[in-house]
Length: 163
Length: 440
Image: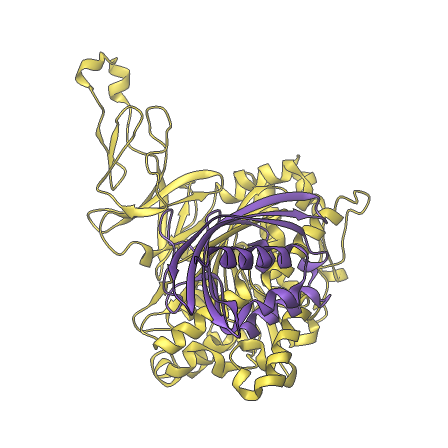
């Protein structure tokens, strides 16, 4: 039986946790040694591919680094995060591109609507996302989340809730 | 605006210990138009780096002020700059951010130019039944003035400007402190990040030299460093600010003529710098003093549009003002050629974490600029009090630290980290005022 329904459910759960600011739930979806990666672009058509020698928009190796971001945006000590924007993440075009008993690779499109409450304006980020899911304690977890942000001229800022 | 009104935007009374900048400098459309005409489009602006053009016919496109420009290395190896606008109808002739092209052919009516900007073809010229007056005109792309210092390329749309060396003055030494970090020079790492903020460009100029804001704007970043320290101990000392709370730090500033400014200071965690691994070699090449300065925190603005911030990592920032209340920034990671793979990777992680608009520090800066822009709509408040820290110690000329570098700035000031010097803004605003008053 295809794992597509389970993979889709995980992606929807991730989007919902972000939209509802359930940060602990969001973090729990990732493995301890996960890689969260948003590459930058070299030029009009080519994203960077090697984060050891090229720049990324976000590169977090391990859940602890994601937890630092959560600490920062929820700690009340970052003016950029007060108040947090309201977001609606729409996940679609989900495709299972590799399927094994212990690992899955899932491609999807993410459209993130971001309303900046303080400035009363809004923007949309759209990205092509590849998730690598692994089986861990009878559930799927995110071992790698690679988001290729297509509109990379950022209005002021971007953080994990924007993608 | 009349020259007298423009001069009045800066209240500069050093003998009385007063320096203020009028809020209209940040919110007025008329001031913005004047800045574009007199500073950005009539004086030297930074365009890019020589290492972006390694081969003949390599080019990159940019804007100088509001105007589209191509910077290209010709077949003869000379780097030139010309307006990116066809002489026939004004269409852009070069459409890519960077590339290599022997010719640029306009896609509209087919006029062609070589990599030095010279017209090499007008489609159906003979059949065109042109008048003699047309043939008498020059059909080349409009040339801009283009000069370099140690691979830093500057362009002026106005040919009547002093030589670049005179424009840079002592600021050139701070560029040398970057260029000399490797015997093989510096390189730009692939991947740039561009962002906009809804505030005046001069907030960016100020913030890069602003020591005072660090502890109040970035407590969330400082907290993250503290958490790492609690968890990993000395293994967490991987960034300049890791031991920020443990050391007595010196901070100083220098202003140079023509708007340039440099903030500098001792580095709490010098061993976190990628350069640290080659320090002995560097000192043998440039001397002990300059090697030490390379490890210092140095945030510099080459007025008006480029900044090099070397603190958590080394960032080149290009400022592009779009409106009085809208600015575009592009960030580039500069690195010493030949550094070890481990140092390179650490440099990149430091850069992303601190400088990216998706990192742990910059969003708090840009949000603060936007808050300033919004707050300045309080139109009854014309003058703010953000330019007077350090006025009791600032001096004309250089201090002993400038002497270490063998340079003589117009003003210098130094003190502890907590002094949070603001005299660093005086030089830029004096030059800014003078350019606005003098006109294009």
